[in-house]
Length: 394
Image 1 (cartoon, one colour):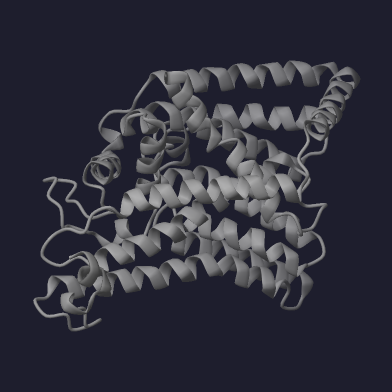
Image 2 (cartoon, one colour):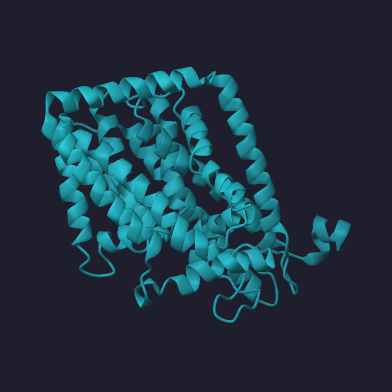
């Protein structure tokens, strides 16, 4: 049974991201989206973006129809709708892209040939590669087998909120201290990450704590170092230099835990938290990906991957709103200064769509929660007698 649950979990980190990534980048610039890391990462965060949109709609529906008694069942509806939609997208990708294992094997064979040729040309590249993989295995072992203590105090909110979502079948509507329903904080309601963890627990049967403290650290550490290797290609072209870069970076992470606010702590200690995924995985990839796009010709077809990546990052935490916006604007300003004219406005708008949508949803949820606190509905004028749901089923 545990093997079946593991396969169900890995589907959300293998087939689903690849299928969605290939669909999202289908019409985008070919030269920028040949890298498997790019396709996979865009697909991964695009799946988070889709989940965020569905969650926002159902969470609004839940709170809109909540009066004296909690309105339950929206989390179950979210799990069903999202699962069905992912299955449909995988089937669509199979028809659109004409998936074949032969193409995958040819690609892997070609990439492996390049790496082998590079190692034969420079024997030190093989040595550096083995050193890096040895360091990576050590970090994976500690990520899997060890746990931080009071420094992960945010789990009193994050992990408990995910478990409460499962227990009460409500989206962000339970007090994470007392366990009482009808309690919502805006900063939790405006993000989808705790709800997504609850969804994975429902879909796979693993406990929330097992997903957060055992499975996620290993998976996201591998994803992060895949992104860092992609980042090294922006700086170096030789395989030897890229492996040296990875060795130095992994050692810096291992011995750079200066505080629980550092990037090292986010990557190696609490990678399951939304802020950690944003700072250690999403933002580094977003920086390199946007730089690569700005280096080539500006194309409208690239706006969809940027938008989905931006919205996916905003599903992780409300800190995404300032961080993603600031990163997008600074990159645009640097390129405009370099080009001596406003350059890539389409990319700027696509990158800002995610934070803008989250900000709008944040404001609407805040107004709705204020409306729910008052005895009379004064903002949205909600009345139980006018609700079609209560008319039909109440």
